[in-house]
Amino acid sequence: MNDVTLTDNGNRERDVTAHLFGVRTSYSFSPDVSLNALVQWDTNQDRFVSNFRFNYIISPGSNIYVVYNERRDNGDATEALLGDPLDRTLIVKLAYLFDL
Image (cartoon, rainbow, N blue to C red):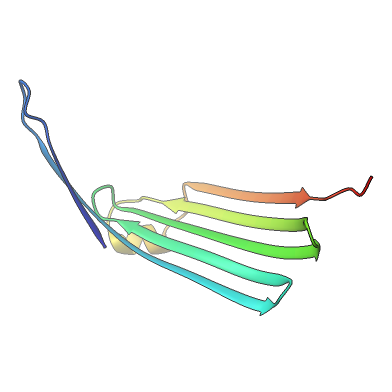
């Protein structure tokens, strides 16, 4: 959990407190295959964000990544977890080392 408080001492004064709760985990199926996950809840914006990354090492210096991101901020915690996502992204990346 992160607790951040910002104060503006200029002409206007404002306090902002944001609580971020998150879990990060990583699992290796083998030396060449792994899965990473980050799940985070922001109480200030009522936002639930998840990120999953699958990595397969084809050969040393060559990898394929599959990344899935999702964002939900539909009001309260129950709606954010169970409601429809606002953003979804699926990315596939190939990094290949050529031997010249």
